Image (cartoon, rainbow, N blue to C red; front, side, top):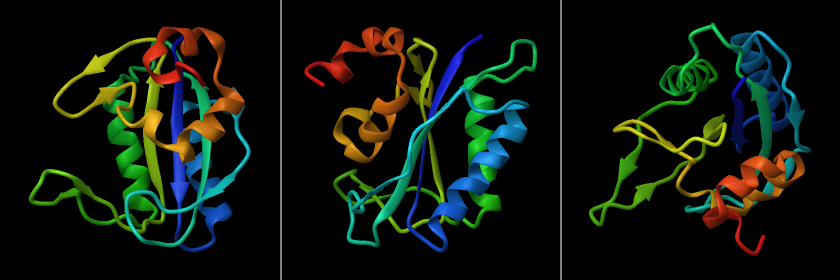
Length: 158
């Protein structure tokens, strides 16, 4: 049964309630409770000037035979984000750098077991994990050693 790690963050509205609502929606989608949940960690906005974020990391065991693939999980996460009020699509500046904004919820797929997945829509492991303290701090609370060993380029010296 694949282990799936997600990062959740919010800097709008009732932030704890936003994270809880996203977790409930994910639990419903997976058909099971998370196998691990970090504490909620407050961090400054990353990549733009904005309100502080509340973040967490969560691990689910992906049920076999339910047809949940990495791409379907991406679609599911994006549907939850839209249902919770996230608007717009990713934006890029003239130099090709991502432009970030405040948001009611952000759900990123960090790991899908110990696999490396590269498609036009999805990169796993998430390519910015090592640069983001708001991901690494909560992730450190729940990450299993097997996954950590599978990606030494992310966790070297951490």
